[in-house]
Length: 105
Image 1 (tube, one colour):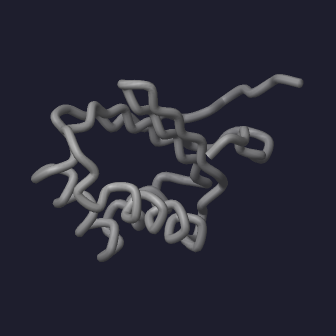
Image 2 (cartoon, helix red, strand yellow; image 1 turned 30 degrees about the vertical axis):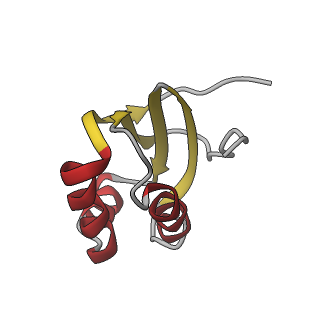
């Protein structure tokens, strides 16, 4: 992903996922692509941004907290989460924040 998400006027929510990977791919890249495509079909999804240079940071933007809950509990996403715990991440944090202001060029 190399674009800045085109989000609506606030307020909306951001899920901030910071991670450190284990060695090797083990199917990670394919699953990451699938999760981005799947998230984009979910009600309330507004956009996504991601970068990785050692530390990976992915921000997904959502209309409301209920949309985030539904995404967290999506069956395919639950499988990806379990694989993350088991083999892809040595450390991670998920944070949820309300976006109240936004500006830029």
